[in-house]
Image (cartoon, rainbow, N blue to C red; front, side, top):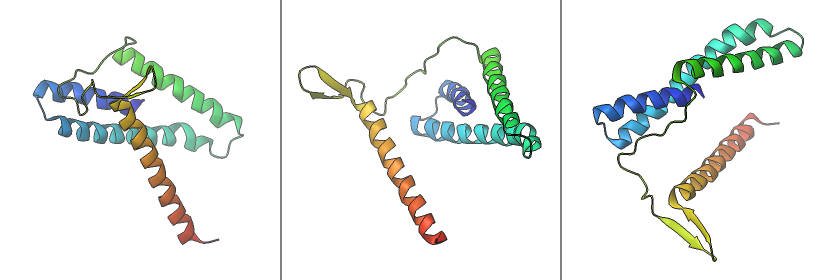
Length: 137
């Protein structure tokens, strides 16, 4: 969630500057990774590390508290209203879709998301299998 809001903020800044779409997407991904990484390290250091040898219920309660804290901080700073990203140039035409049957149609953007998801899951499975084979029994 934190990474998504970092990316959203960067998108808002870059669109105002008129940056290229591909550059905006790369910068958004980097901002999301860096933002989520910084918050994750801080949460681990201050909320989980002190509870490493505590009874099992303590880290669970800490995780719930951190979750509520992060959600409320974002809600206070950003607001609770829905928002949309402004479109400059679409990577995929919004009217492109696959027709099938009598009333079934899928937009090309959804097909791209489904294809990328399966491709990334397959790549992750291959990497994990290769790592497990190197580690041995």
